[in-house]
Structures are given as structure tokens and as C-alpha cells.
Image (tube, rainbow, N blue to C red):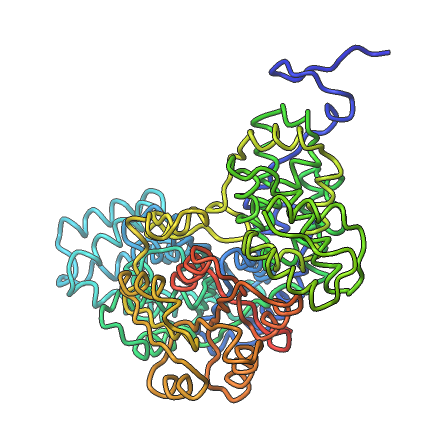
Length: 628
């Protein structure tokens, strides 16, 4: 027999654990540096490459690869770049607008393009510039001619300095570039093909508004010349807001018109299919060597609750890997249980908060007892009374008689739910959640649970991998950081100037606290007490988001019915949150099919969603027909 195995820090490991070294996933675009195409981007890249090559005679034009944060824009660009670079008459340039070291995006982009030309062409441009006395003085001309004897980088720097010295010389920049490209195209390729330069601009939507506008101006004012195609990776919603904010006029129509002048073709990356998303999760689990910790239910949960977003999936897996490597004493509880805790923390932060709250004695046992009683009432079958009877007694409620009627059971259920956390009814209808909690409960006894929850995880709901990182002005808000902090205790909240909210509820007074909070943040809140009032409001205002109760009057599903009407008749297609704490099990699925979030009555959850929608980092789920 072999002796004990120790890691570098002196922890004793069994052979199985010692053999496992979980690996962090980096942010490298999918498939880059490997033969793996986890999202099958090759087919799309092939089609886009064929389109660009076939349209080379109509260049210049700009193609936008449009998708939300983390949905694979860079991956598609890298695949497309490889295909085009393999074409004999095509040259490619890669410019990262976010990480470019140049203080000016205009300077960085134009220099990146100039560096792609051979030295002889740049020398010809230098001679053209030095021959124009109004562009450059004798000393500058001498520096250019001397510089041209050295590396092309120095020549390009000198050329830029000469042309960017003042507004008058910059006006001549496009002419110099047009002459340069005309000469380059006329020379042709060795095979006789017409030359084409494809410029890839990545991470534009991560930039500040001023830098976005600089890049757009470089494309439209200076590089709008024959033989050039631009491919932009961007979330056009974020881009649109950046242009709008930079202009300072707040007029959406002008921002849209501006971008339409820049972008002629827009390809929107669709969400991965269920099969592709499952393939992606499996691939990441294999790469991180964590595949044996995730069963099929957990994998399905990741697919469903990350929005099938590649970067969010990576961050979830990395959360576990980080936690495990930072504290190897998690081996005492088993890495498979740590994975379950991470899933609970990130996908069900409110319930995880109950588990970690020292004031809550037995949230897991309470939930499982409630779930048992809830299922019994729904099925109309009286069974296994001992477990949930104790729950009634613990809450100070008289338990049902031995042979209660269906109506009596429903009454008892309502009484019990009044004493339990608001999340319980919705969670009881969530099969993935119930199975996850049951699995964790089977693995650990009550004493182990108490020990486990004294070890707080390093990542919290604010850093959840199923949501993109909040922008800085939102990240400072306690509303985004903790679903457990009362609204009244928050300070320095995220601002929502000009954000227009329609709140549909036949009892608007019950929403007064949150309405006042939104108003303090700068939002404009309109209330409608019924369907007719909502229709009138839609005619007058373009709303940023709609909040709606599910129950209006005696109809428990009126909110769903009305939203279906708005969608079907094209009245409103924007984000919707259903604000309700009581809902039947099928309501979340029906809401999702209408492209709505919720239902929830957690005010901080509502504010978190509103903040993320306002910042453009969260979009509501599309109805299945549109998503396909």
C-alpha cells in the first residue's frame, strides 16, 4: 500500500482527489488554439467569408457581428479572420478598440491599417506628403525622409504626426489614404486577384462613448475608401447608447441614423440551441476536468440559467475551481457538495442567503417539509404527515386534521406560506432546485450543514457568473450587491435618469415604496390600474420597461393575458417583469414564453433586473418563436 498523498500546502489527499487538478478556464475565444469548435462557428464564418469576398468590388462597407456580452462575438471574428487570411488576395488587420494602447482610437486604428502596407507604398505616401508644403514644414519633411530609411513603424508614426498636426492637415488625411489604397489595389495580388483589406474591430462595445465615436469617425471619415471592409464585434444596443450619450442630445432617432451610416450589414448571433449549449457545457467541463462533479440535472440547470452564454458558463465553472483551490478543506465535505453550493449561491441567491443567515435555523429542512406538503395539496393526496406536521407546529400554526378536505388543505397551505419565505412557492415548483436541495440534503447531515455554512463562499450573488459584471456605476449600488439588504438601508444607488417605467397594477398603492425609490433614482414611473389605462399609456409614451402584477381583479392570470395581447398586436415588445410572490407552478414558463422575467416580489431582485436592463447588460428571454 502507498502512504498518504500530500499537496504543496501539506493537506492530506486520497488518491482520487490527488489525481484531480481542476483547471480554470481562460477567456480565449472558443476554439482558438485548438481544433475544437464548441459552438460550430465554422459554418457561419464560411458564409460570412464568402459574402465578403464576393462583395469585394463594392467595398468599402461595414459588417457588424452583433450579440450581447459573452455570446461569442470574438470567437466568430477569430474564425472569420482565419478563413479570410487564407485567401490569396485578402489581407487582414486586427484592432482591439478596448485594449489598444493609443490614447486616440482614431490614431490607433489608422496606424494599424497603415502598418499592413509594405514599405515602398508607405515611402510613396511620405513623398506625397513632403511635397505638400501646406501639410508639413521642411523640418517635418526631413524627419519623414530620414525615418523612411528605418523601420516601417517609425515611418508610420512620423506620417501620422505630420497629418494630424492640425485640423487642416487632418482634412487631407482621407485623400492620402485614398491614394494609398488605390495604388495598393491597382498592383493586384500575385495571382492577379483584386486586393481586399479586412479590418476587424473587437470589443467596441466595452469602450467609453467618446472612443466609440472616434472609431466610427475613423471608419466613416478617413477609411471609407475602396478596398476596405470593416467587421465590428459589438452589442449594437450598447453601441447605440454610447453614441446617444456622447452626442448629449438624448434623441434615439439621431443615434440610430448615425449608426446606420456606419454599418451596412448586421449579423445577429443567435443563442445556441439546446443541443449546442449542452455540447458547450460538456466541453468546458472536460477542459476544466470537473465533468465527474456535474450530473445531467446540474448540466441542464447551467444551460437554462446562464442564458446559454459561453462566458457566463465559464465563470460559473471557474467560481467552483477558485473556491476549491483556495480552501482545500472543502475536501472534508466533498467537491461534489461544493459544486451544489456554488449552483445554489449563483442561481438561487435568495435561498442561499437564507441558508447562510445565522438567524435561520433549518431553512433546508423547512423547505423540504413545505415542498412535501405543497405537493400533497396540489395532488390532493393526504400522506406522510409527520414531517410537515412538525413544520406547522414550529411556525405556531395548528396542523391539519387527520382527514382534512381539499379545501381545508388549501387553507392550511395559505396559512403556512404566510409564515414562510416568499420564495418557497416558486422554488417548490422548480424541479431542478428541488432535486439540487434534496441531493445536498442526502449527502450531508444537519450538523455538517451547519459547519458548511460557516464557511462563506468567496463569490457572492453580485459576482454571479450567470450575469455579466455590472458597470461601475451600478456595481457601487447595494441593490445590485445583496438581495437581502432592505431598500431603506441602501445608499449611493445606481441612477436611472430618463428611464421610463410603466407599472400595471390594480392596487398601485402597494408599490409605493419601490415607485418612490425608482423616482429618486431619476426614473419616470407611470401607473396604470387596468388594461385600458395601459393601452392609453402605450399610445403616449415609449417605455423602457413594464412592471406588471399577475392578478388583476378576480383574474389570477390577467397580467399574462394582457402581455400576450401587447405582444401579438405589436403594442409593446420591450422587457417585462412580473411582480408577484404567489404563482402556480407553470407561471414562470408561461412568462418566459412571452419574453418576461419573473414572477418575483423581491424588491431587490426587481431593482437588480431593472438596473441590468437599464445598463444594457441584461436582456429578457425571447419567446421561443423569436429565439428560434
